[in-house]
Length: 146
Image (cartoon, rainbow, N blue to C red; front, side, top):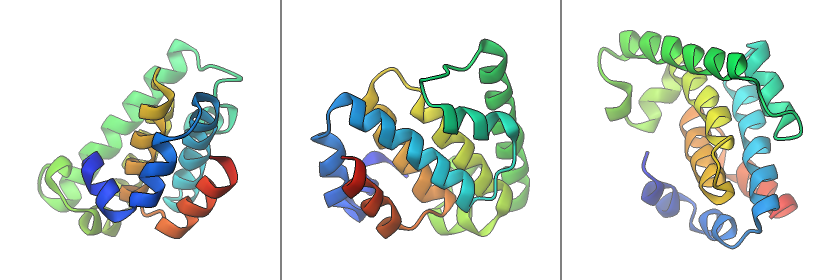
């Protein structure tokens, strides 16, 4: 799902993110990552700790490598499940397979770490939608934080 698809699905949410202050956007990105991990049933300690810790405890290189490895493993499992490249699959197809949803949730955690806070919030949101997060839940979260 590209950013313009997020804007097409949830234009109000995209506008809130675009108008957010950097600190608000960063907090939102990590909260979205936590929600995505919960929805996708991610139990990986590293992913959960990074999503919970935000930038208060910036992950060590080893933790980042674990996240990237986990994402790669889940993407491979997802590709095997759908019989093709996950990057070309639609959201419904990704949400239908647990490994695909988990891969997108881990991607949301990784996205939340991006240097640009607004880009982090947008990308974490995009990945959270692909992981199966409900639009209304994310909009409510934006209402609290942005």
